[in-house]
Length: 279
Length: 183
Image 1 (spheres, helix red, strand yellow):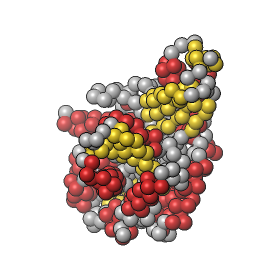
Image 2 (image 1 turned 90 degrees about the vertical axis):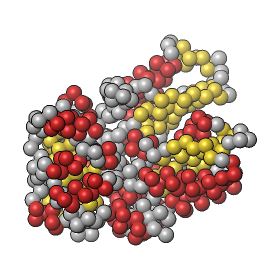
Image 3 (image 1 turned 135 degrees about the vertical axis):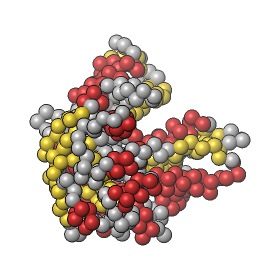
Image 4 (image 1 turned 180 degrees about the horizontal axis):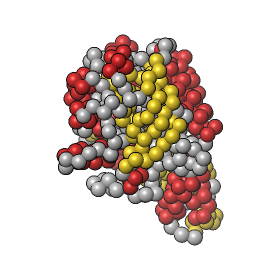
C-alpha cells in the first residue's frame, strides 16, 4: 500500500487549475494553426489568428486565456494500492480548487441554482473518481466554461434511429448553439451505457487529444463523418461564417440496454483547457 | 482588411456608417453588465429610479472579468453570451443605449429594437479574454460591487477589436456569414 498525504493532492490540484487556465496545451495551438490553413473565410482566418495571439498573451502576461475559468471539473483515477491519509480526498480537491481560484486570480463562477448567490471560492468542484490498478493517482483538471456547456444534451434515442439518428442529433445541437459556444468547438459524443453514463462518456470524449481517432475503425469513421457535417454548416469561427466550425469530434461508446440508445453531446469551446499530473 | 476606428459615446454619424461584417477598433469608455446587473437595471427602472450611469449614446459590454492580478488593470475580459440579456436589452435601447458588445445571436425583438432605436450589436471574440484585456486601460467599479464579477465596471478602452454583427440596416453577420459558407 503506497501512502499519499492529502497535502500532495491539494497542491497538485492548485497547480493544475492555474496552469490549465493560463497555459494552453500545444495540442490546441496546433489545431488552431491548422485551422487557419483550412479556413476559407478571411474573417474566419482573422478570428483564428486572434485566438492564437490570445493564447500567447495569456502565457506572457500570466492571465487566464478566457475570463470564464469554469467550474473545476476534476477526474481522479485512483490506484487501488494507494492509501490516502491526512484527511478527506473530496475536501482536499475542494481546498486545491479554492487555492487555485484565489491565488491564480481565476474567476469564481459557481453559484446557487436559484438565488444565484456565488459560493465565493468556485467550490464545490465537479469530481469524478474511478478506481484503477496500480499505486498512483492520476489527476486531470478540465476547467469548463458555461457558454459551451449550455449547449449539451442527453437524449434517449430509439435503437432503430442508429448511426443516422446520432449524426442528426449532434448536428442539431451544433446548429442550435451556432455562434454561442465559441466556435471552433470540440464535440464530445457519448453513446450507450445508460442515461448518466452517456453524459459522462461525452465529457471523457473531450479529453481525447485533438486529431486522435477512436481505435474502433467504424467509430473513427463516425467521428469524421460528424466532423465533416459540422464543418459544412457554414457557422465558422465565432459564428461569423466559415469552414472551420469544429476542430474535432470524439466519440466514446459502451454497450447499452436492449431497449435503449442513449446519446449525449457535450460541447467544448476553442479555449479547451486540460492538464494532468500523476502522483 | 480595412479597420475603422470609432470612439464612444457613439454619435449617429458613426452608427450610420457601420456595416455588419466589418472589423472595428473602439476607444473611449464602455460599461460592463451581465445577467445580475441587467436584472437590477430593469428593477431600478420599474421602481421609477435612475440607472447608475446615463446610458444615452453609451455602450454596454456583456462581460464578467476575471480578477485583476497585482499590477494589472484587469484580468481576462472576453464577452459572455448575449442572448441571456435579450429580455432586458430593448428597454435599454429605448432609453438611448447605442451599442452592445457580446457574443452570440440576439432574439428577433432585440434585432427589431436595434433598427428601431438605431444601435449596433458588436461581437468581441469569445474566449479571447487575454487579448481583449490588452485594450483595457482603466477599470473602475461604479455599481453593484457586491455582485463580484457581475458588478458594473466603467472600462477605459483603447483600440478594442470588435466585429459589427447587427447594424441599423437589418443586416446580421451570423446569418449572412453562415449562408455564404454553407455547403
